[in-house]
Image (tube, rainbow, N blue to C red):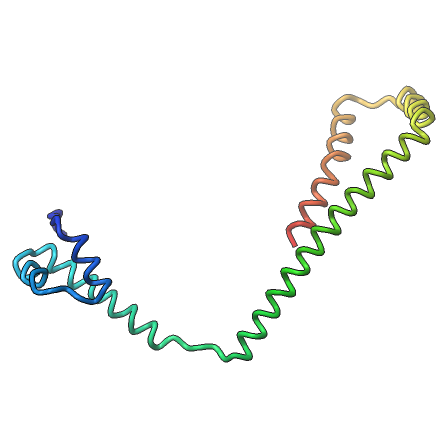
Length: 146
């Protein structure tokens, strides 16, 4: 493989893409080895592309209609899932706020009593707290992955 470069390679590629070389560029291709090689390779690739496009199967109108409806249904389901997720988060936030408002003081006293009676090592306590904090996040990620 040669490392020779020609200043007219970009011009040749543009002309090949348009499908018209012109007499001046054809004369240059005959005289320039890198451009001749580029013409041969790029021309073959462009011919193969044109041939593939011409032979590509065209789907039926019914098949396209079915795919379009299926995509619309999936988009609608995604929008519904997102709005349900927002509604669930808002409901959960309101429920937690109401629990704290009505039972906050009593819950704090009960929690202090439970914590003072239970003797748990620090690593175990950290493991429990990490699990309690990460479980909802893991559930959310699992739901979002579907």
